[in-house]
Length: 257
Image (cartoon, rainbow, N blue to C red; front, side, top):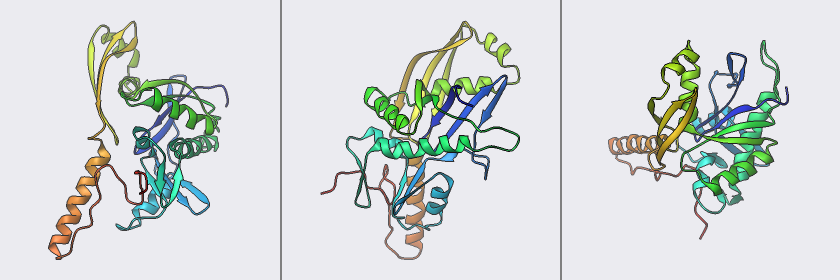
């Protein structure tokens, strides 16, 4: 149904669309495993595959470097210039638009006991350190996907609201927090964000935020993979094939040459 405003969490690792209908929160998760959609794009020749299918291809590569595989496109907004992937130059907003268009198309598909949704407007979550350039790129990507961004909300604030909204006595508990200051610890795939919030008049206000984009979950994953590869190589007397933190296999982010 058109005219509704959806909540859109475009994450580094996974992405999810939700909406509030009455007192019910509806999350448009992946139908196969009931989890958020992986933020993975696979440029397979002239075809673009997004989400679970792209992630499954990555998982089945068994340590090889899959051609055309782009993980964590959101992190490209922290770097200047295009993404270089297997000799192909891709604008960050184009790669992100593929993920957002996939989410919009998925929302349009009827669900068991539900209805198709026309997601043409959304409130989008962002890390606390995303400023003008990153916001402009996200708006441009959303426009390419046919989605208008109504407002940006910092991810820790959205996380606090989601936590309280999911409580059995949401309104009573929100009233009990009136005037109190809360610290939100948001550790995502790309950033670690800390935000102080205050509840006033039944609303959540952001007081202070600080973020670090060098210790996101993706960096930990890479270092754990490198540790496992190093130990396996040592056990079998082979040189380890490591990947650098902040980079994904099959993905080139630096300018060529």
